[in-house]
Image (cartoon, rainbow, N blue to C red):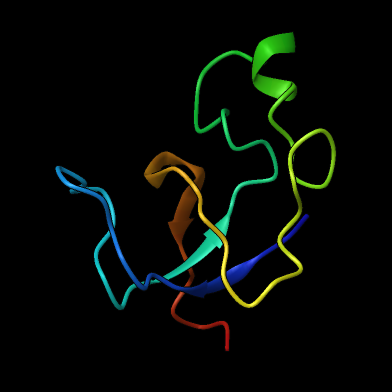
Length: 72
């Protein structure tokens, strides 16, 4: 359920992340900020959504955050 990598492509109109940026996935892809709700927690990677044990995954732009520079 934890993923890290490089953005390979972005969809039309995406400005939150850019190609080449190092990112990590959010565990609950629908929960970037705000109050925790049942709906937001129903978006967790690994169950019920597919996990990230893959060469490439497709995630919404708001389901990733910049990877800290100090982490390899």
